[in-house]
Image (cartoon, rainbow, N blue to C red; front, side, top):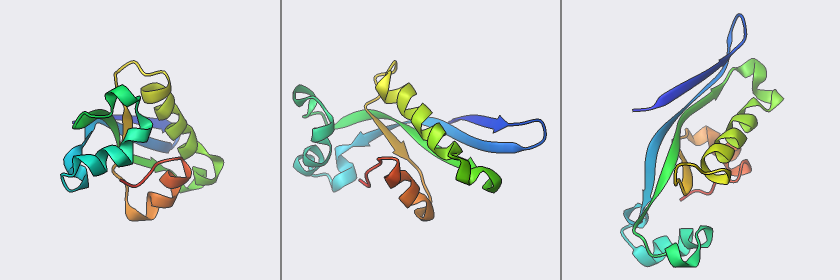
Length: 116
C-alpha cells in the first residue's frame, strides 16, 4: 500500500509521487551480513551497525510532467522527501529507497542515492 501525492495547477498535473514503507535487509546483498554492514554501515552510528535490517521509506513512483522536467520539480520532491524522512526524521526511518526505472537511475544518483 502506498500514499500518493499529486501536484497540479488549475488545468494539469505537474507531478506525482508516492511513498510506502520499506526496509533494507541484509539479504539484499546475497545474505552476507559483513558485506551489508560494509556497504551501509558508514551511514549509521557505530553502535547501530550490527542490525540485520533498517527501516526505510520507498519512493514507489515519482513522475514529472515533461513540460516541467527542466524546472527542478523532481529535485524539489526528492529534497522534500529527504527533509521529511531523514533530516527532520519523525518516523525512525534510516534510509530512503527508490523503485525506479533504469532510465531514471542517473537522476537519483545525482540526488545522492547509491545503488545497493
